[in-house]
Image (cartoon, rainbow, N blue to C red):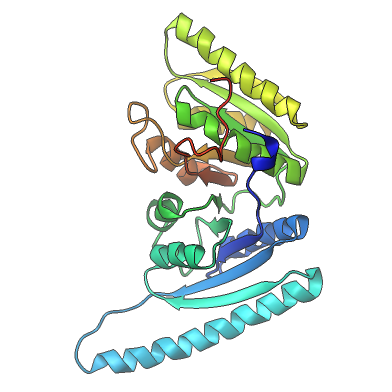
Length: 295
């Protein structure tokens, strides 16, 4: 893959529930929008409640009132952001299932990335990482950055790029490169080894070396280390902690022999338990939009 095929971020979607985590996600979005001259789409979702008979119309009116109030609040936030930062903000209020509306709006507005909190204290609280965020990560057609309240740092100075022995794993390299170039980040490659065959280890280390060389050729600073163990997610998060990293880049799908399809065990554990933001991207079916290094 050539460097001019890197994905661009011009439209950022923020699901916003007025919680502390949502506010932190918005801070990340504002920082990113200023850096990349992107627009922000601020989305609040009112859960629809299904009632039958005469109650239907009454609750419909309540929804309209709440929808209007929500949009007014969002517009005030958007105006403040525009006034302080010169960023264009579009306010959207929807009624429906939270994760489904996020995915639908992302598709309708053709956003390039979603940044969303994982542990809101209100609004999304009962739809925690195991439901809403995981489903958005699985179904959105764009990368998703999940933000936790553990880390208050804004910006990504150090990016952890975990590489395992699956073909899809190396596809996320181009996304890490794109973020690193935009943020001036240092990339930390974690070669994850959970197999014992020495010949396979040597081949795997050569592939990781190729990833490192490709990144260096594209002008970013890189370091790497190899981590051995049984739990890829714990190995990834431990490496991130040791590096004092700001972002982990993972794939949403892995080989079924390792993690299962879609948001497999590895990705779920990292999104659920990471103390720093996690960027999840979908693997490509050899369409040239992501990197395959040295194959």
